[in-house]
Structures are given as structure tokens and as C-alpha cells.
Length: 277
Length: 352
Image (tube, rainbow over all chains, first blue to last red):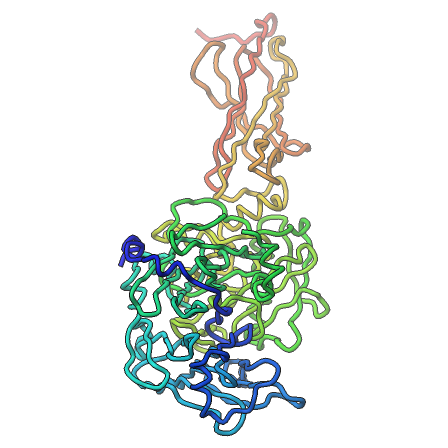
């Protein structure tokens, strides 16, 4: 799909984007805390039957587990902070990520090379719920919508790590439905420009109406914005786009591509694709 | 956009903006760029000329031995191949410039290494992602971590040299779309993994050097200028006399310099020493120039001279031909006419 086509398909419904929590950094330990969807009613209901201890002071972080040769053996997910350390520690493989906070649990993705799992994990025994598993696919990144009703995930083909697209599924179970195809199909010219994808960032708007999917190559990124129901799409793929910060009303906030100096924040108007000065 | 406003109202943004990023990465595609020029520069202050910049390993994030060796070698590569008065790097345990391995980092998620030169000219920081980190495309492997490096690994010495180039001031080189000029720079947006051509380059490319020369000057006035440059030169010619008796000795003096243009930065107006300057002659009013001598380098920077005994009037000029191995344009001086009086005694006798 060409960039122009994306713009043609864009509908004004996407304009009404409200503040979303800070975007999760893809890959590796996130710099910030999960973005706290715990107040949403759906999240509360989802969380209600999990026997979770309230998370104190922050929620979770991934800490590297290092092998003797200095390589990455995996991560330890540290949940909450008590006097003598984290409230709970969960061992994770090297391909793992920490997602949104849902009540007193956090979304965790992990892949041990044979099986991918999406889980809600919190402090306390019994505070764990498997959302999805797959042996054929890798759940590379995932996010829960603000209402706490569904999870969206980037799926990779296990053998080739080829992107299969962005899929959505109710948290309670059901079929994965594709919201977006692979970037290679949607915007091959953009993919050719930014090169192999290093990281993908998923960020919901605060009202759950819009999902931003940012794909980052080694140097630059491109963002696809899709309505929550998959009905309309927009590609923001101009050169010079750095990592996504958040979606704020009609604006996509990203860093600029830069090096060696503080990266400026770039605001892109979602209704027009215009980069604001 | 009002960045200060964002900083006031959104602490997370402030934290996100603070990291200074340079991304080096794997790839199989080279970003298209149709310009070919010296590397761009990144922001921040320059180091002082030939400044010795020492670095140390960050406590708690000390690179493993195999990576330390590659980084030390890369610092030596930078020192040896900079061909400019750029900073020199050396390991020193007490330095405030720190090099780290693994988390935590201020780097963005899509790089295998990054740097921070906001502290220049006092300090810098550099960081390398941990062996085994998983990106969307796959698992990061550093070649130096293996006795028999597998295809797809990244040469840590090459990547570290790229980072030292950034620390100097270099931005990512703009390559041709087909990547045919990849060898012109080590400081690349997309570094190559083994076994792609250039994956293990351990010297700055000519377009890296060009920018280092523009920013920091050439090491000496006799040093060659990078062929990635195309500098206009100036050439003058002066003579000790313009009207002389027969067989009088005339001294020809020439000066060669880099044109004094703003975009030549540190190189503007540089005297150019130790080059080949030819003295050419033609009959007065003639059109064909003939080389009659080579001007020897003088003691003064960029100066050349030669004394000749003249027997005939003529017009003279100095010529600097474009060297094939450096980025200087050729130039001819303005010509000077010298009148030589006819021979009056002891004149040559021509056989019939």
C-alpha cells in the first residue's frame, strides 16, 4: 500500500485523538514505568479475579541476567518495590518485553525460542494469567487497550521473524483478528528506506479510538495509525521521524532523527500528515 | 513546537529527550542519498585540536574482555587514520568519559551502540548493547565474542570506530543509493554485518577524514587533503625583476594556498606546502606554455622558489596541477612578463 493510499483512506474519525499514556519502549528494559491503565473499568474487571498484591512504588522493570561471557541470558522482571527489594521476581528469557500495567499486574511478553506467551503478572502468588500462547508465532510486542478489553500484538513468523502484522484479540480469549498487515505490504517504499525493523512501538490513544504502530529501522521510524476497529488507517512515513513518544489529540509526538545532540520533539498533525514547525 | 513548554509540562518527555543518540545498526539496505560529500556533522562543541581525550569503563557496566580489546583497538584506529588535528583517544581508568556495556542506557531501542558528546570538549559517553539482545529482526551478535565469528555478526572494532567518529563530530555519511561508495566512510547509518563488504573496516574513510579536516584542520601544511574534498586553491607568482640584462638571474617565487572560503572552515586560507609547482614560459604574446623548471619548496609555509638565468624575454606563470591523490583543485597563477636585454658580449656563436 502506498503512502498516498494511506492518506486517502484516512478519515476524520482519527483526528479526535486524546492523550495516551507514554509509549512503551520496544525491546529490552523499558525506561519508564508501565503506563497505568488500571483505572479503566475493563481493566478492573479483568484484574478482579487475579490474586494480586498491590504493587508498591512503581510497577515493574526488566533487569538483565548476564551469562559468564557477558552475553544476555535473559531478564528478571522485578515487580513492585518493598523494603528489601522487589515484591516479586520473575525470570524471563532474552526475548521478552514489559507492557502496560493493568491494575496491580503488568503485561509481559516472553519467547523461549519454542513458545511465545503473553501474560498478566503481578506481585503475590496466583497473580498470573496467560492471555495467549503460540508456537508458530512470536508475540514481539503487545499492548492492552485503555478499556482493558483487548490486547493488540505484533506477530512475527517464528522461523523467519517476518512480520505478519498487528493482531487484536479480546483479553478473555477468542480469535486473533488482523488490524494491520505487515509494513512490507502496507508501505514497501518506506520499509526500503528505513531498512530492517529493529523495534516496534505500540501506543493507544487515551480513548482507545486509535492505535499508533511505529516501526523503527536502525535510524528512522515510520508510524501507522489505525482506528481501533481497524476501519481507517494513516501512514506517517516522512523521513526524519525518530521514536514515538505519544499520541496527543490530533498530534503524533516523536523525536526527530538526530545524533549527538538532544533530539528535538517533532509534532505531526494526524489529520493532514503535516509536520508542525 | 515549544520544546521548553513540553519540558515544563511533561517530565517523561524531558527524560526521553535527554539521551543523545547515535544509532548504528545492522542492515541489508542502504538509505538512498544522491549526494556525495564529506560526512555531515553532529551538534555540540568541538574538541580542541589534537586534544587527548581519555576514557574509562563505566563501573557496573564494564565491557567483557573481548569487547574491551575491540574498543581499545578502535581508539587506536581513530588516532591512526584521522588525518586531521582531531581528538586522540586513550584508555585511562580515571577518566570522566565512560564507555558502558549493557543496560541501563539512554539509547533508543533501535541501535546496537550509541554515544553522547554533549560533554565535549570535556567528556563523552559511549554505550554498546549486550551480546544476545533481541531486536525485531533477530539476535545481536558481536563477532569478537566468538573464536569463529559467524556470518551476521557485527565487528565491534568497526562499530566502535564509528562511535569514536561520532564523538569527534561526524554524522552519518550520505551514500549513493546503490551503496557503491560505502568504503568512503566508516560512520554509516547502517553498518554492515559479516560478511558484507566493509563489515570490518578499521580506518576512517575518505569522507570521514574530509569532515575531520574541515573541523579540525590537517595535521601539517604538507599533509594531503582528503579526496572527498574538492578545494579551490590559489597560486601566485612574483619575480625579483621584470626587466633584466642578458643572462641575469631572476628569482621566481610562488605561493599556494587553499582558497579563503567560509565553507572551508578550518582549511580556509591554509598555505599548502610540499607540493609540485611548475614554472612555465611562453614567448611574449605566445599561446603555448612550456615547463621550464620546478619551484622548490621554500622555508615559508606554502612558498616555493627558484632562480633562473634568463637569456630571452618571455611570459611566466606558476602551475599547480590537480593531484590525483588529494582533494585540491589545480590552479595557474597570473603570468608575469620579463624583458631580457639583448646579448652584448660573450654571446653564443651559432654554427652555420
